[in-house]
Image (tube, rainbow, N blue to C red):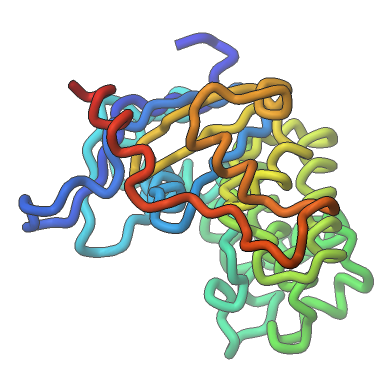
Length: 288
């Protein structure tokens, strides 16, 4: 593995346990991510993009199993590593930002208690050290009056502030990789732009690589160095943003781009759709 490679995934597959009659939900996925790089994974709902990120972070839900030749993160084996090693790595060097912060933040506990507990568990800090770090992390994501926010409950914050808080919690471990799963889906357009700018700023200031999961191919084209396109549990194209904008090779990628309306779209006409099974022939030919 190249010294510049931070994450290397080889032949990752995800299946439903005990259901050999059901095809794998993710099949033979391989990709890599360099230090400081921003890479997007795009695809329709059910394409396997979120499952891929959950497998990398070892957060697959019960009932699913994974196999992989290798998932190497900064020299750590995430497939065969010990539980202790995985807890250390996944709680500090690798941060996960979920789509809905309210499903990740405990509504019955104050923000400060949740942030301080996490960092004390993983870094062994005193309560005061952890509180100071929590305040600095909230400042890093441009939350005003951070000391006051620590005393508030999640429902007292706006949607954008809750998402920023989730990012701040991830930053407390000083991660080299941020996995962001649809981090702006539940937010309005203005707040979406602010959160995406925040991730880009963190990438610039702290050098954290970002793996950004989204169904919004236009959004990814604006912020990513590379974009990985998934279709029915497989990677069909891995291309630079420049190639994505100038003309991708795979018809599914082109179909995703055509399906995005623009200012010239006739509102009286039906939107472009991708028919189910449209690419099955080519898909089967590739596996022949």
